[in-house]
Length: 284
View (cartoon, rainbow, N blue to C red):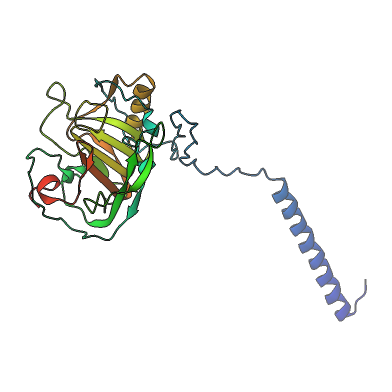
């Protein structure tokens, strides 16, 4: 062995470097051989399938890590009047998305108007629990529907009277939304309304058993997460011919807020001003 001190130091450093390189190589080989862990795919989102003309739309479900915000429930079916003669999904009186709506500048507060008053009009404060007057955050005008321009009609100009026909209100994201209350029942002293049309983010509710908004009160709700049990029950009864539709009682759960909520209310087919204090927000 070379006994020169400088050479000995160089020799030891070289041995240490070779040992460190060997350890690093073994570690890298071990990592490469280790089985890889598969990462879970993100949950599927709700995707609307494009319906063919004359067919009902098909919706894929929302899955949230295998759980649901809604408890399982049985949704009753109640008999209704003669079924509509048009597919509901393509009926501008049932599906508000067909009409669409445009934003407008208007007072974002309750308004006082004259005229007759129904002391049993649906009360919109009951959308929330406990009932409340929400903040009004947007005003919209629903488009008219021209029934003479084709077999199912087509979108017309925005309705300007009254000046607001769709109201956007603030909510707490995730809070439950309930049926606006009314005393008059439509069946057996129990049911006060039924569902005319349902999608995962849209509901049309009727306060009579007529399969049309032409009589009585009709409520349109846009932009909520509808309870899947209501959507499924509506789809089942609609496919079976609409002789029965989902029945609703005061206080029944409709869905959850996803942000702001849009609502429109009609009386005998006519869109009303949803800001009117004397009709829909009594006592505020």
